[in-house]
Image (cartoon, rainbow, N blue to C red):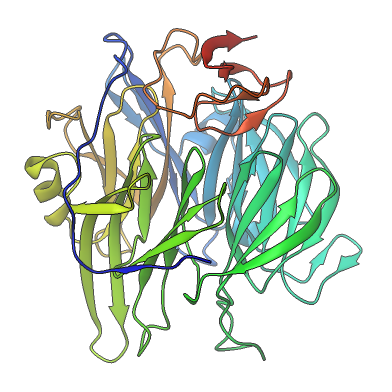
Length: 411
């Protein structure tokens, strides 16, 4: 296993060889966590054509609450979106207009998701799924046509981020309940066969508490390591699914995203010894395992530095616009910001809701067919079909796909 520990920034050149469609705009869904155990999670919806922000969007459309602490949102296909509602113990499904189209129960303490066309995969901290019990945490497999759980697989303690690559699931284990349960922090990535839902192996990163968002750029994963908030500092792990090598950078990537080629990170490192936060803003090229300070340019980087409490950073796969949020005091309404790659504001700062933690872009019209996706995914020649993130999908997937180096819209 090859390991490196990097503490210094290196020069980085980002190529933007694919031309974006000039008329494509982003409608945005912001998943606001609310306050834990307050049952006040909300979705905010920004309409790019009208310039209007609708807070309490799910409640307005469906006349009911979303639930307690939604902590992940994922677009499965053009008209199906999944939301992990953590403390309500459900996976809520909506269409692109926000309508409730079903929910999956029996996955308590659900955390993060990924999908491959037919199935949705969800991590859980809990020790049960329906009538099945586990010693540690697990991954649940949901058939998106029926919304039913069809299989599970035990992984490490308190699994968090999850991504799909060439038939395998890569799961970041945290051990985040080490302070309250009789186990240590985790340092491992579980590799799971997505078809049979069996754990193939675990890979030890040497970094504890692999917590939070996990971004995927083709074969590469960007994983945050929180440390222990005392003596063990936070780090960033960039993992290569092809070689299973990884590189460790000496700063956190608490909030991370990708344009399909490089990773953009906003790291927040906290210590109970000093009660201070230390922020780092970096761009990482996984192909060369080099990094540099900042995101896009000085203007955008400085805007992020001005935030009171950065809470999310997200690059749209359709426009390459960068969006980020400020949670402020964590107890009152936060704000959403958006900029083009050149640093032009997409809109005035938008007031959203409490703890705006996750962003999802949907191109105007709701379909990806008219968008020239700017993600530079690997041009596989193996005959299989991949989405714009480099994830393998099947014939039931709807949207822009790549097969044998050619991009087309699969209906």
